[in-house]
Length: 109
Image 1: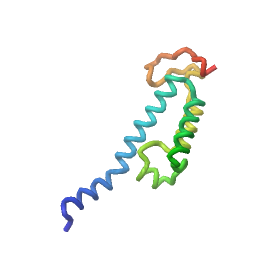
Image 2: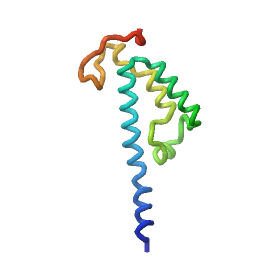
Image 3: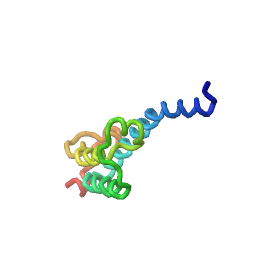
Image 4: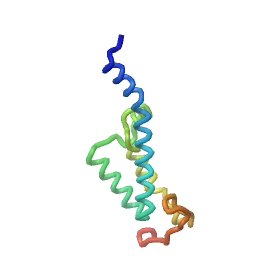
């Protein structure tokens, strides 16, 4: 029979992918907000590359490793997103400014 600490450890281990996914979604939302505030996609991508180099994370982990261990989006996913996300350049509203299309900043020109 399992003792209580062992059972708790098993429950927490089984729940870890759910906690990690919640955290990854929150981090992705923060990335979106940062890009919408600054309109500086290149700086965002360079920051992710620098952070990845400093902590030597795997830029593209296997799906299993990503689900079980990563509480932030993988580095390569964040860099790609930073370079591709720019609704302001297409005249579309941003997600965090609730329908307001902010004027182009000097970084977006």
